Length: 485
Ligand SMILES: NC(=O)c1ccc[n+]([C@@H]2O[C@H](COP(=O)([O-])OP(=O)(O)OC[C@H]3O[C@@H](n4cnc5c(N)ncnc54)[C@H](O)[C@@H]3O)[C@@H](O)[C@H]2O)c1
Ligand SMILES: C[N+](C)(C)CCCC=O
Image 1 (cartoon, helix red, strand yellow):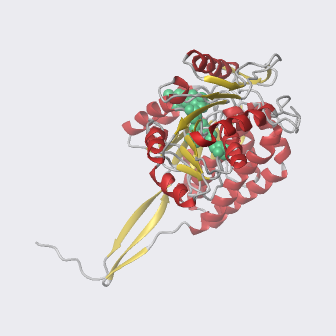
Image 2: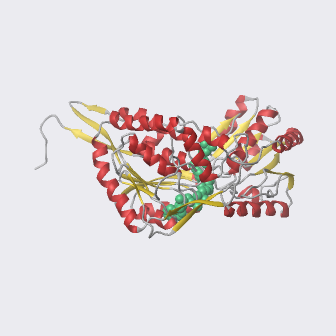
Image 3: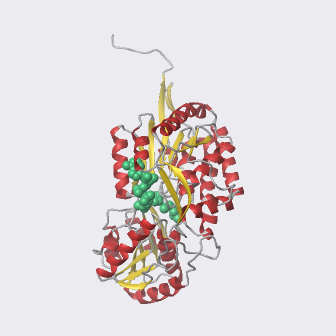
């Protein structure tokens, strides 16, 4: 890692880097080699306290600034991020192992999109006027206060900004805890926000495992918690937040269906399945990992898919020709290997991949199973790795029922040339972020989030404003006040 890229301490609190080596050491492992490239320390209670009190103090002043002034800070931060895109992308690759080919276009850029979008909205976050005869009511859109963001490891830069940008635009302050697996990127986001003019304490980063997250979630000064993580963690965090009536956004896991009808454009459907299963080595929450293919197109689909998957360039993530990198950690690689073994043991047909690469780092081959049935483990559980399950179907009604037969509801996709059918089927699939003849697009202008066990609330778009602000209504009487006695 270059000197300019590397964060200089574990935490970022009150506008500056902060170290407290009394906290447990967390090694940062480069997934492409398994080598330790940095070390951070989990936040001690003193660091958590410093971050929360800095956020409380900063939030009042930040909320008193005009929306335009807050927005300018965010858009300046977006500009700085774009100027430093290469360095930030390299850091994201060190942190996650994702190929530079991806991180150059999907991480700091997506984070900058969020800063720019919510920076642009900040000046127009207004209430409304409601005339009631000569009396009237006005509403004020007010911040919630101090918000806590907790991140997963697959998109550390993006997640910190998908949460931080709307929170700050609305006049909140944030304490963000990255995943312990990828602690580096959010620190640079905090540094850039300071450089762009964010007052000290408005955006803080503290490191740690679940216990630090839990300390933040249960602190009475915290008004809202936004988590990106697994469903089991979501249940714990949601319950802890509910105990004190805190607002929540839950961006959780999925096992999303991607439905390919006979009349689909074959190349596009195969591209959609590849993008929806193997991008970021399959470590994407919204992935369409249950690929339902209508019987008439099944063999052609599998043949073309196997051919294209073989041409994936697997290798050094820092080489821009590489388009498929390692798993984030040895632990995640082993979880995925166990699912592959289960798929084979339960009778699914291995069409591509299935093995660990014989090289250093946590590399698995992109893996495709065919003849998967609904009851198999690989069709029911979120794997969070490069394992696609292809299932056959005959009719539209059948596939809708089977696609919906899951506790999850993050995403869903349909490939068909019949657009009436595309809209009809998407209308019946119970999921929050859906696609017709595409997969995994996530522009900041569109709401992103799940239904059922996949989550609560929405990130991005104007919808996110509702989750980071609250309305105060003020009744104004123009005449005398009547009372019964
Ligand atoms: N819906 C989305 O937008 C989205 C995006 C990315 C990842 N994900 C999901 O995230 C999961 C993978 O990420 P992961 O393995 O980091 O998830 P995880 O649930 O293990 O951890 C997520 C975060 O929660 C923290 N945490 C754990 N226990 C906690 C507790 N009791 N209180 C507070 N914080 C706690 C962790 O330290 C980490 O920062 C997958 O299920 C994936 O689908 C969802
Ligand atoms: C932008 N993507 C690739 C859809 C990722 C969204 C975040 C989920 O993991």
